[in-house]
Length: 562
Image 1 (spheres, one colour):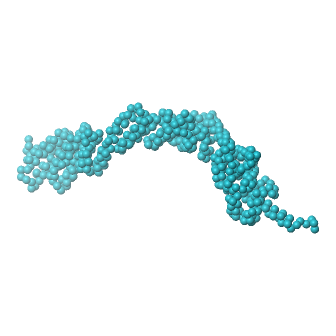
Image 2 (cartoon, helix red, strand yellow):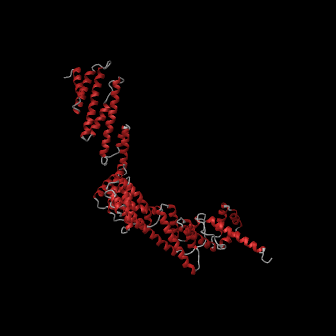
Image 3 (cartoon, helix red, strand yellow):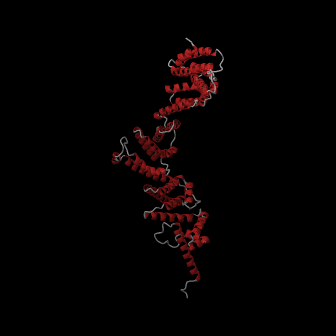
């Protein structure tokens, strides 16, 4: 019958239906969250049909509905066709359509919009079609800015980050766009001139940032909010900064926005500093650091006339104010001056911190390092009299770091009772040394400590009866040397009383030894006269030594001395 279709025609129709089915399933796989509003017209996506027809394994996976297999085989197809312009154009059309449809429904289409933008930007087109392509990419860039701002305001930072990354890729050029597409599973090996697109992105991004700053400034000066602020805080810095913070936390490079936000942080810091709110100052500086760290790479040091440099300089000034130690403060003030050499507050505080740090180093015996701090302070304040005096002192001390080490060791040996070692080491310090007075005081303490230690040992042994009549002469010799070294009235009184007590004990010991059984005949009178002499010396040294006075009377009576 002439009306019966031929076998060939039936096979062609079946083949066409199979391709159409496979393409529909591929689209369902590619856009599971964004189904088409109506079925795709058969034959519309010839490049996709060509891929399915040329890839039996992909067609088989699509017909079986095997998603893992579809994933593997589609990726291989894309990698092999990264320079297939008709296929990439078809995908660009599809991704744009699905993104626009989802946006119209109020949904989130960041990935689809990013793929569409990257493909349209990189597709090579004839010159007569360039204007149309530019119009499409401009539309997509505007959508990214709008969708990114909406996501950011809604707290969807991951979605906003993708929109921003796509905009940054457009501004950076083909390589960044290709990398973005590869990350989104669409590798490409085509390129185009994106210079004009980069300019449009910059303009769109600048409008976005300017919009944010305007909203933040409105919050900064909101009268109702200001009325609720603590006294001394003139504007609502917290809410204004909070409006900018989300985009800053995404690592955005927007110098004007960053400079404005950092300036508000600085104004807030001034208010908190005047209220002596150190905890609040540290908290605000943590937030400010996010702005400063992103702003710094876009600024050039030593351009203090620029507002961004002044903002960075003030920020580092406050970091120095709250620093935990002078070394950290010095680093912060140096950084403040690197951005603005005319920051007089930073210069003044830098000099103060360097001198304090120098004092700390000098206290550790590191006089050369302390001198270096003074020299660094002089480079900032060459006519400061405090700096001049510090350098003069440290210049003298810097030659005696070794002497200071001897003194430090001597103090440790004193604490551990190694008096002989102390006295031996201190002999190396000449009278002309700047530390001569300190060494003299340490020798006094060593003689005093050694003498009293010996005296306590002897008197303890005598009390136990172990050794009677042991000589206290070594102890007396040390204490007399200590007395000769005592320069202050307080030291002289203390050493004199100690020596007086030991002389009293020695006198008693001598008499007791003479009176002990088995003592040499006639020894008592000699011992008594010697004891009387010792006791007179003891009383001369300490007139309040009542024990010595009592022992003097007793010995005179026993020995018959008048």
